[in-house]
Length: 312
Image 1 (tube, rainbow, N blue to C red):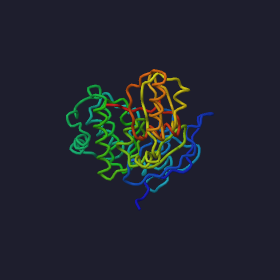
Image 2 (cartoon, helix red, strand yellow):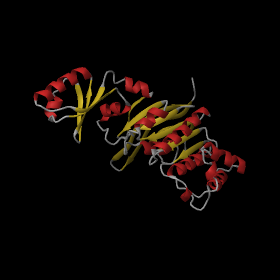
Image 3 (cartoon, rainbow, N blue to C red):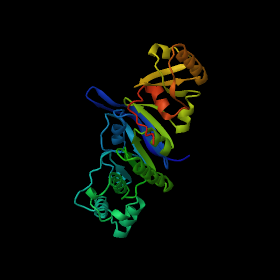
Image 4 (tube, helix red, strand yellow):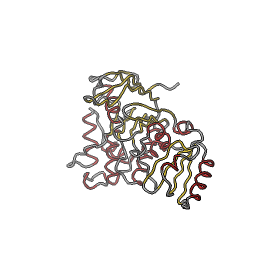
């Protein structure tokens, strides 16, 4: 069995009456890419900040790479890399100069050639002499990732690493994260992008209101929904008429469209078309899809609206 790179027990944090993280238990295996998925305000960033030592928990323990994570664990902190949700790049230093400075802050000697190699690994060779304000958002995020890797860490934490990036830049960064796994690194990242968790993570933990409400491989999480199907359509029926359809587990109106979850899509659709015909209303833009992480989150929490799906 692979050793545990991260072991968290009973992690808890409150801000006044607001319980941000409620007794989090989590284990991440060495060499794994693990995603904490949830809407804004779910507690993901607070949990991450406690795990890598930026924020002191009210209760609970954290072990990283087999050792306790404590405020004075400097040797341990030297083995981890962190990319914050908003990394503040130094505006007056070039990409190359920033890497050399960060290496010195870690007490390491990084040669110019090694720094250039690190920039090449995040596809920034052409920007070595560029200041941050001359870089695109995607290039700045890749530089932030390079800074998180400057000490060649065994364990890497990424907080919303692709937030605000366009689809092409997001997918470029995905490939860089996959390359970390190929190099034997362990990665824990937070995201509110559903397809990002599905595309990158070996396992996904879904957080809601400070609690871990599901944890498994993406395929196993969606398989747990069984025969649940998602039906999207446009039809002028009332909420009472829609909710009376057979096998419907959930119905939600989104503008002129309905989103339904059904455990027997053929039965639901048959009754739907009969009801629509009876009142003389057409059914348009019908889409039926099999379970995805979005459906599981909706079933667990009823809060799909804050999760983002990029339909590209």
